[in-house]
Image (cartoon, rainbow, N blue to C red; front, side, top):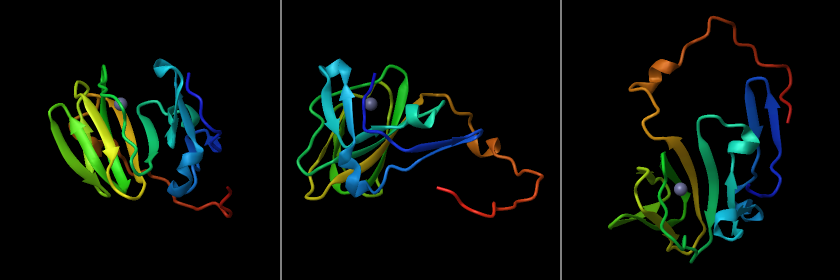
Length: 159
Ligand code: ZN
């Protein structure tokens, strides 16, 4: 089981919406890792459970300056995608290391032994997606369809 600070989430029949707040305040969240002796990881928020995601796991992350993930890890079935939002750091997969910064996108196959660290002087903010490797059809744009119904915005937008 994971443990993290409460995240305000609203649900409708066909949606979930959560508001994590500014990236600058992400350190208020804390993820506890049972497999690592209940190691506490500040600045990491998993979203599968609060948003009731069914096809993707997702986390928002903040590594302050000098913070590095202290171990290598791989996955059994999940491909990971790292979306770097701000800051700068280094990423390692197997025997390759490369710089990452705002705008970098990294895909790692399940078997890749990976680690990453903040080597800059500002927080490294990034989002991680986990999806089952090989689960998407060849052409994902074909999955969308324009609906034959009028578009009317509700009279009020509620929080
Ligand atoms: Zn991972």
